[in-house]
Length: 276
Ligand SMILES: C[S@@+](CC[C@H](N)C(=O)[O-])C[C@H]1O[C@@H](n2cnc3c(N)ncnc32)[C@H](O)[C@@H]1O
Image (cartoon, rainbow, N blue to C red; front, side, top):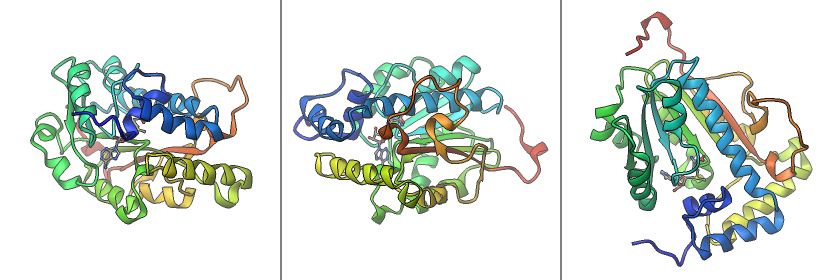
């Protein structure tokens, strides 16, 4: 049963991407954010473009053929499995989200072949999730995995210790795996103007009905890659991470308050990583 009296992260995000799986309450929550940052929707598009570039890189030149997309959200225009399977038709993709609506819609719309599955699960339960029977049936824990945690950790409060959550995944993942993360950014002393904007946006997210959406500093976010090697160009503003081409337009301030990066669990001896 869908609760249309409270906004959800997935539906608000769907609306910001121009999707149709959202309700008045979700649109009202985004409107509060857009009062401060009218081009916030473009940030969502930018986040998707970042994800698509990373998946293409991982499934292509990095040779990753199994993916776990945690906090995958509602089906959208271009989904992880479509990008991965375009590079490698045998690539397996398991989507996970703790919002039951995402799992229902995901199963109906994204499970288009035997290599694509959508689970209802929580990032907070790393051990349970990685041992989930559906995950182990499709993902070989002895081989490198591409994990995506995009736009999720900003919805975990400090009490849930997102850095520790990520440390657990980074420890449990097999050598040769990659961890791709995007997160709302508080530039703090790096940029005073953007810091003020991040503070205002955080308020709008917290008070606007969603109740989550914390902007964290670069230093805090670097902890999400503990135990991994951060690939070049590092933890950057989204369009600075291997952009698909030169910038054609100046960026709005609200497009600059998210960082993304990809960590690599470099194997001690790369020759021991066997493709399927
Ligand atoms: C902003 S959306 C991002 C969707 C997609 N990853 C992207 O970057 O385009 C964040 C998603 O994380 C999910 N989420 C929030 N907390 C979660 C948790 N504890 N475990 C799993 N998913 C969670 C939300 O339901 C939502 O669908």
